[in-house]
Image 1 (spheres, rainbow, N blue to C red):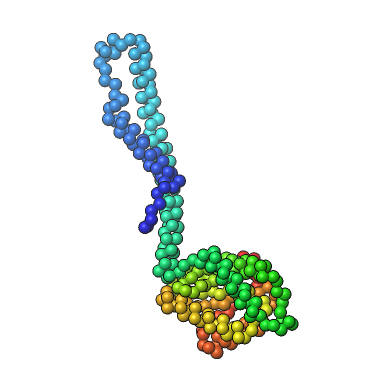
Image 2 (cartoon, rainbow, N blue to C red; image 1 turned 135 degrees about the horizontal axis):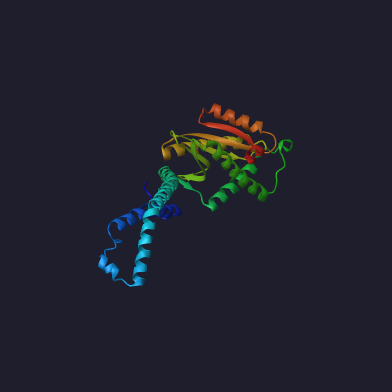
Length: 285
């Protein structure tokens, strides 16, 4: 454990436990050492005043009572001390392991050149994607679902990306560390899931496509996806799969997904795949 964390409530519990264990042993040693022995001759005892004699009798009674109940008190104190020490140590160990995992993940992200995007970068990315999506929609009026105002679209895009992150994090948490809105080198990624068990990571691009997208836009889009995938592999020296996750609110945009799949197949881009999920399923997580 590289970064030991001592200052916590469980440190206090461990300290109390150690005191409860050591204190009875120390007290026993103190008694055995002779500090409470009453060394006085019979003659001196006979010459004591009544007050001193009474005080000596009371002291002797207290000592007898202490020796009578001391074993029970020591046993209870040591038992409680052992419990506190073990319980505090286990809790502290759990916290330390969690901190170590976080530290390890931070180190892995640095080694993979993964950086979290700033709030401004995230906002700029979502706005740019909204502009591209708006320009990419097929202009056939019969194929277009209602398209809301710019501000509501951007707000919806933020909500969809957050819901997608929560959905994928829950789905992949056993095998992957899921990261949202990150940069690797000069490229931005909506979601990256780094594998815990091999060197094959998952890269996700989230798209809110309810309307058919122009073929020219999809060709450029696939080229960018391929470029970003290759850049990721060259930067972090790990294999990858790039998944285009299409989130839809109405009908599945089959025209778009079919054309994307044909593009991927014709260009032999086996590392790219297309998945679709409804908003209802996404927000129900």
